[in-house]
Structure formats: structure tokens, C-alpha cells
Amino acid sequence: MKMKNAYLPKPVKIINFKRESSDTFTLRLGLKVKHEPGQFLQVSIPGIGEVPISFASYSNKHVELSIHEVGNVTNALAKLKKGDKLLVRGPYGKGYPMEELKGKNVIIMGGGCGVAPLKGVIEYVEKFKKDFEDVVLFLGFRSINDILFKEHLSRWKKKFCVNTSVDKRPAKTCFGVKVGFITKLIEKSRLESENSVALMCGPPIMINFIIRILKDKGFKDNQIFVSAERMMNCGIGVCGHCMIHGKYTCKDGPVFRYDEIKND
Image (tube, rainbow, N blue to C red; front, side, top):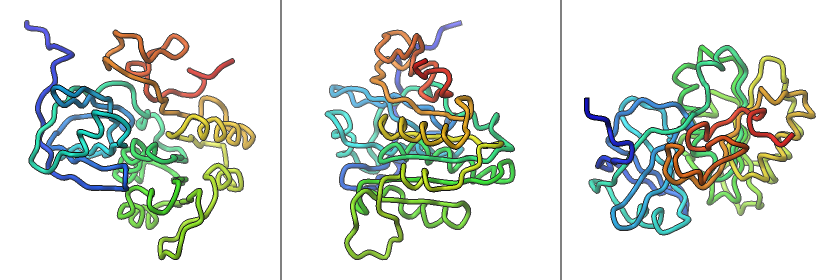
């Protein structure tokens, strides 16, 4: 039997392009692929390069990728439009273990572009709401203009306890948010550790602060799940660029239970 080439991408059509903020956009792809929230695709444009992008949706009809413009490839992806094609391979990696977490209180914590992978988690919980207990969201952004998924936030607020904050005090706006770092909101919240799990993604400094806060509130390391940020390259654990404590981010992660990667 002929072996499938793990490096061989396939062309996929863009069925929608949406600008989320000045430096973040969402591509909806005409791709149906089974995946877990937190997994990723390798996305490429011939002649420019390839980048890993986490799923920002949970649907059996399409795939959404929310992309932060930070380099040549992502800047080139931002110039694409509906009807264009790009190349993808995957899905790769290990996502948030949603099946294992059913029956628990779920606390979802994200900052900036780190909210994008968590959108897939939220959509999963929406779809299987009866399988989970209380669901609480903490989402932090730099400013009102940097808030992602505004139209989804309105829907989420009707279903879950949603806490949104911005670092900078906004000008007059009808969008209700609190001012201050998301870590302060979490610190002041009454979060019960019993039968609860915390799922997070965002800047490493934010994650480190949140972990300290959660542990002060009684959370154990095996109740905390983190999407790690590392420079992934091949996506299949061959090149070694993304190793953390002997584990490959692209293969053993990018989502890790905290006790798997913490510094003892």
C-alpha cells in the first residue's frame, strides 16, 4: 500500500474572509476535517512559506483560522480573498481533551490572539453544553479595537458567564468591558477548584500569572491545561525546533496539562 506523504499539502478554497481587528483576520476554508479544539494546520503559500495555525472553530461543515499578522507568510495570507486557494496539511498535534473534561466546570482563559484557539473550545462546549457543568470565560485584550469575535461575544454572553477586559481605558463605547489586566479579574473572582478545569492560551507572561493565581485558589497542576507557544516547523516531531522538556510541541502538544511541562 502506498504510504501517505506527511509533508504533502492540499489546496483548499477560501469561502470567506473577515477582518477581526487591524492586525487579525479570519479565513473560513471549504475544508471538512475531524479535529480537536487546540489542534493546528500547517498553512502555506508557494514561494513564500508555511506557518502553523490553530483551529478557531469547531464545525463539521468548514474550518476557520484566525490569524495574527506577524511575518511574511501571515502578511501574505492577509492579502488573500474569498475564492482564492491556499495549501494546508494536518490536522496535527494534541488539543484540549474535551471528552475527558465532560461533567466538569470549565474555565476558559485567553489573552489577545490567544483567544483564537479557545474559540474552538467554546464552540465545542456550545455544541455539547449539557455535557458540562458551569462554563466561565475570561477574555483579555489590549483595547476595544483589539477585541476579537465581537459578534460571537454577544451570543456567548447569553449562554455563559463571560468576563471581558481591556488593558487601556476605552473612549466612549457601547461595548461593555472592564478596564485592567485579565489576571486582576481572575484574581478577584470566586473560582471553585472542586470538579473544575482551567483551559488557557495567550502570552507566556499572562499564563504564568494565571497559573499562580489558580494555584492560590486551590487548583492542582493536573486541572490546568495550557496551549504552549513554540516555533513549530515541520509539524510532525521531526525537526526538533519546538521541544519543551523532552516533548515536542507539535506532536505531544501544543496543548499540555501543566504537570507535563512545568519546571520542577
